[in-house]
Length: 360
Figure 1 (cartoon, rainbow, N blue to C red):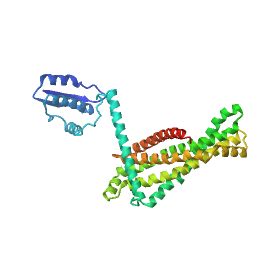
Figure 2 (tube, helix red, strand yellow):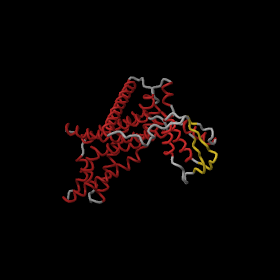
Figure 3 (cartoon, rainbow, N blue to C red):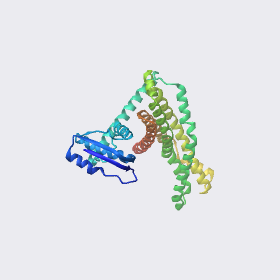
């Protein structure tokens, strides 16, 4: 079977359809397929697409294709196209899995992810055990750097957010309390909300978006550059050297950031109460002191420690899971933020119910 190619083959012009030729090829099943390109003019990728589909049809019927008469440039480009394998999943006609299959795959992925989290936490617990017994291998200067990064360096953003949260709480409470002439109780509302919940919660969310993403990006870049593999080769446990100082720094700094956020939130409520609601400084101070005691501060401090551990675990885990390319580093940082915030909200709900049961 001889296919004669003539004229100009341009994307903007009119080119023959390949289906009739392919159907004739399937019907006749010749021993070989040849080309006559004596009258071929200018050509572009439209010619290549035509020939590629025709050769695929010939391969289905085990028909030999002879390219001898084709221009050298066409032959080289066809060889190059066939030398590169198709990417997995690039076939647009691939059948989509059904709802049941997608649900099963999602459940399997969820279980695999949970298993990885449990494994990582177990290995981190072993690293903490080595730290207690004096066998953990990491540099003290790294711990100092991470204490600085998760503590003092985070104060500006924590200051802004905590102050504004206190202002918002005061405004929201004032709208309702003014109807009963009880504006003074804005101090109780802001103080209790900050020390029991909002201080620890907002500080943790800030650290998840700021520090958790940074941990994931740092470790992810090291994983892509094979620096973690180099540590393993030298006999240095990556979990001790990289994860442990980050975990300790965040767990140690979170209670301090929580207290700082509590104070700034109360200050925000104080500004609203004294400047808009007409409450004097002494009245607001006395009302806040009478409303808050040590047991009210305890839930927030306890939660802040666990929130810091969650942020550190998911930030470091996503970074250690990163592999492949620089785009995977961004995906790891995004996943660390999402996982950290979701786990914080879930843990906050659990602690709230638990504290209510215990009467704290």
